[in-house]
Amino acid sequence: NPLARAQYMLAAHLPRQLPPDGGFEVAFAGRSNAGKSSALNALCQQNALARVSKTPGRTQQLVYFEMPQHPDRFLVDLPGYGYAKVPHDLREHWQAFLDTYFRTRLALRGLVVVMDIRHPLKDYDRHMLNYTVERGLPAHALLTKADKLSRGAVGNAVQAVRRDLAQSFGDTVSVQAFSGESKLGVDEARGVICSWLEI
Ligand code: GDP
Image (cartoon, rainbow, N blue to C red; front, top):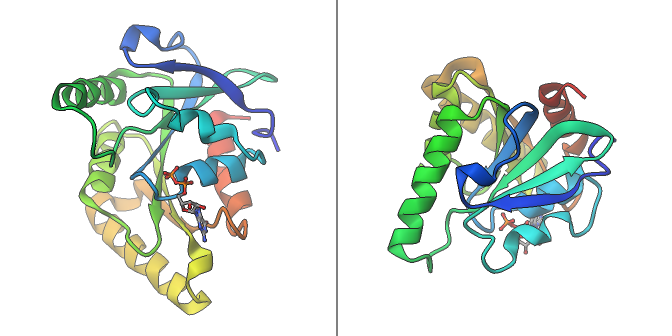
């Protein structure tokens, strides 16, 4: 697993704190509680990798994880949405930062959107998908907590989201079922991410 040695590198709340824009990176977005940390941990086969993104003060930052054996390859945790208690000016700052990041970051190769399979495609999820598709970048949707539904219900949910996204975004967004709990779909998701990172 090329992601197994991922480790915390830095957290940025300003564009100038980002690493040099010469590498390859994949960003992860998801409403809080969707299961993004669990997904990152499962993909990297670590128990507490993404815990760092949840420490106070980091909920409005881009958190970078590096792969020591693959220089300039990064996973980027975008934790900043769905947190109710963020003051207004901080929220505006965060929006502006995210906007700049998506519009200008050359290293960005694709976006993984983590959604609870029972509550997919909320406004913010679509907003994040819009950013990437506008840039001409691919996105991959993980419908997580699939272990909470029957196999039939999982299939139906995946089909419904696929149809919806195909209508909105064409074939630039792919969709799969996932579970950080049962590890369903972990290999498939890792395959997509590693192909974007060319590792
Ligand atoms: P985040 O806020 O998006 O990073 O979400 P977390 O990864 O912290 O998960 C939020 C809650 O959902 C936690 O209680 C997790 O244990 C639970 N959870 C996350 N992924 C799964 C999953 O695949 N299956 C189940 N059953 N629970 C999950």
